[in-house]
Length: 295
Length: 336
Image (cartoon, rainbow over all chains, first blue to last red; front, side, top):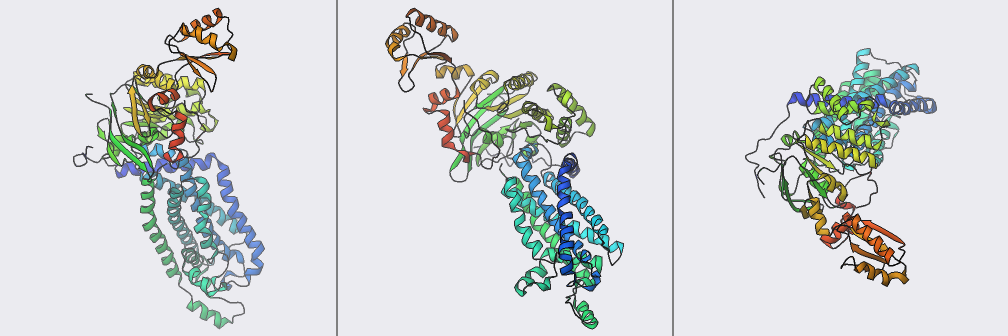
């Protein structure tokens, strides 16, 4: 056995080339959505269906339990929540896309090229971010048609969308790690729902957390999806939306609840903190798993 | 050898505790030739290619391509190699041209150069007519050719082809053989794996037979065939004629054998079809009508039977699917 490691120079890939590689891979991934439009149609139909179903089926029942700032319109309460649900489900696409490339040998090809290895993952998460941005945009348009009105101002509303996108991007890296770990598209299909379902339903996406049993509340209030949904609601509807509201409260009780409610800035900060923490853990982890993945 | 372009020394690669996919394999070869790796599924062919193309790190041993230690400087090694894996790794929803251009961009060519190079290559693989159709509409053979074109974008010194003709029709297979010969004529070195002895024989200047992650024989196609004893004639004769037939064939060869289980009479055919003619004439003169007469070329099974004492199918069953962890979508294939 010969060891020549000490004398051999490691060839590195420049930052400029890395950025170009990321662009090439992102474009390739996005082209798939354009060439196979049915993918995008199905990705959009499902969340729009959720929006319609939840609003018109549960709206009447839940409408009385939501804070008055929503003007009694469940859609005002629901849309910020559903945007985060869409962001979470959409991130699952990252796992599916990667496993598909793995099983087709495309990743092998990429890994045999003198390109930046990080570009495969970065290109994937970026293209999924753009794709999710498109779906979120469509949801917002649909929401406006169904009567959604933000109660703050346009800047805060836009900031809410940015918080949602940052969160979606962070989740994509979790999904990338899951996809690379399970390897097959079939396994990824069910594996991605494992973390997403409990997080989405045990959260404030559909109903206020104070309606949940105490043992669940502790989890539901602090987990990243609730925090992010709160940040969006706070930004789009105001701090009143975060108050611990119960039907039949008097005006002074409501005022009390609002002054006890978490601040909007606090929730935005917490959400961004969660996104950063997720990326600090999962970006290196995904890259590590990618390097070690044997197909 | 003065300057081998590929050098492998005692490379070991294990998967889990049980599977030794490469078990201390060593080989080397000179530039400008086709080098064939022959063996059944699970012999370690793909694993060796994956080590040489920097997709896998060996547990121990040394591997070098174009003078570069693939473990120490994989990025540099990648600029000298091209890889076409077992599945055509092309994107269905891109056109043929977009596929090749994308690989060109990833080889760090400018957009203009990538476009020009794609045009050249598509013409070379005779896909220029279909270049602007999405790959979804391509046949299996066209996909393989496109995959080959993609692996050529970087003008690789060494091209690795992992079972390039598995699962495609005979005409496409011949087309691919022609392309590979042209490449080698142009100075490229090709390492190809195959399960087909005739493919190795047709293309490769030298052939390595591998089994259980080890090299068990190496040489030119003819040398290997000599080791196996060449072609044989097989006769299926009715029971009552058997003695007469044995006598008649004895006049042609000293090595007539009878296989009881399949009721087959077998004799070596060093002259190939000429021997077959003699056999048929001999039977005719003895007044025997054979139920079946066949000239059989040595197959991978024969290579394995001769070299290891067990057939290729048995070797494959032993190594099992664990030899290639995580591989999916594998088509059913027969060895040999």
